[in-house]
Image (cartoon, rainbow, N blue to C red; front, side, top):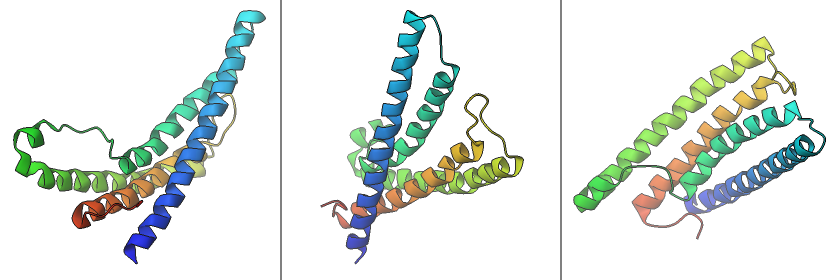
Length: 164
């Protein structure tokens, strides 16, 4: 039952991560390419292109955190488990607990920041995107990381992969 639920969640999260990151990067590449062509051909630069790239970098970084957890490619120091192999499992679980704490903080504090942006109705300078949309990425990322970490703990505990 749990394995089936995790598999469905993993499939939905993977679809969301891969396609939104792909679309965001493609939009960024196209706008940056157009900006470079305009800058070198008619000496005109698009100001909104640079702001859009900044927002895309923020978005892909945060959504990429969940994808990194899925692939187990989060940054961590692994010198101690290599020197003392019996500490690998306890340190893995400690890493999971730290990630759970971080994701809960991102859900709570990110949600508060998004609500603050909603109340103040702030927008980006050039494009005019409501900042609540950008700040809403924080609790979304926190929630996705939380679920992915629970899946990783379950995988480590049972020895079964979620996506198999």
